[in-house]
Image (tube, rainbow over all chains, first blue to last red; front, top):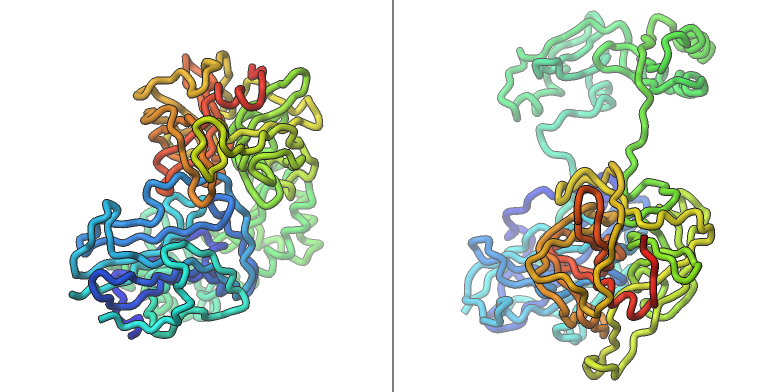
Length: 144
Length: 421
């Protein structure tokens, strides 16, 4: 299994001081229908200097988002949640990382099981930037 | 069949979202997981930097796009045009331009010389009052020094000659002084208006509204914009940042604790009617009672302060407030500025993500919000710049399209009577 199956990565515009961040979404490339899918989203400072992140809320928070093959958002972890609106100044030293994990139960926001097929999964770091900082999409195949 | 082999402990937390401090573990994830990783870098087809140009093109003296958009390069006599075309190939190709489109002008000085002279001229020129800028100017192949008054030209030229910069390599031009744009995030606002940025240890929020309690001059912000949400810890505040102005402006003095088992509070939860706290100014003269910083318009993304709103009335003193669903509410906050939208829900008992807190009887507004807007003033425009104060913003949805505020009646219920204008 390798990142060779990745597709549709698109550039993400970041302020220059955040250019040394690496946003990564890890997941199995395939999963059997109905089985929970482990997701790992990490943000790493790959630079040689410390970066101060401006993170939404009292504690660093990330969202996980799943889109179907037509690009429709079908599930997100934080949908319907009300978040505190403070901005946390979070220093991230060289080589340091933040990580969030979740098991997606292959259900939509409405609770319906998703059918087998291709899905795109992203991790989103909630910051003061509208929409947050998103990892590139990870292509997940759900099989029967 | 799934194709991953995770260690069972790694995901034992089930559906919980976990923040792990993995700073001592460079790669905590299973190698069986594939990854989608984004590194951020310049785009192909963009212009090389001047430094890169100078490294690859001997005799390079500057590059710019002329008024018609044509790539224009300064080269010393005898320098190779082909080398410049090679460096620009990606940029030209990306725009469907031929190498013949490149204009070449004769350079008198090379870029490294100009760079060195700019560094030497900068302290010498900027030490003189009225100097606005010192530029290694790509369009003239000279060092250009901007001054407010051309009468100072002789003084400037003498100073930079002392610094070793040849007089003929310098142009002195008249320039208007550069003033920093005051935004909700960077303004040192004295007296302090509602809507501007405040800083307490490790966090940024917004000033809600100025208020006097008894004779104590204060401002109101969100309760979670204190060291601990609920309870008074004498949180110190700076504006806009401690690093910008290290003089503390205020100290938290009122922030009721979140109670269990109160009326309407679900089992196992802690509740309040407002996410609001009050901080007393250390210098009462810093309070701009009744004023809210204003930007140029609602929902236009601007953070530049262009004036002030004046609070001329308050919403009713009733829990839940007196604004109807469908009416419009506004806020000004340090992250998304002035936003306005329709009230979609009133008196909503609202669980706060990631906590056991429930805020009772809150109002939802379909308008933009972002991290750092917490504490913002919420108001209705009554006429012109006159507004009715309606509450304090404390949260929103993850998409930033809906904000939640505590109505003024809820704030007064918990913080006591307040004079707001």
